[in-house]
Length: 139
Image (cartoon, rainbow, N blue to C red):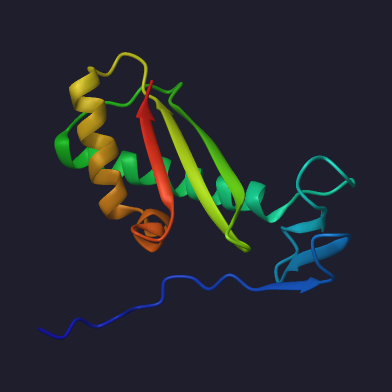
């Protein structure tokens, strides 16, 4: 079966420089940041923080879709603490990640089912599946 693809959104960002003092600005101007290396050197953010923010926001939306499908009410104080590691393995840079999901008041088995389904829905999870080590914990 041939599935048609429909582009829903295209992010456009112009980046100059690199991790050591670069800058990135989106075409709509909503994102306008300085880029600094990991470890707190410089006054900007780093790509790993941006990736963690994007993935966790998308993943939380995917949990919301899964919850609506299952008719589960989500608590307003739900949250995700995302941690993205930059690793050096055999001379190559790699990423690994942890998504720590808090769904207070949702039974643990239900929360785990929502998180499992969210990984099948979230484009960040789908893109990283099998490519980086990911640990998801329901808190």
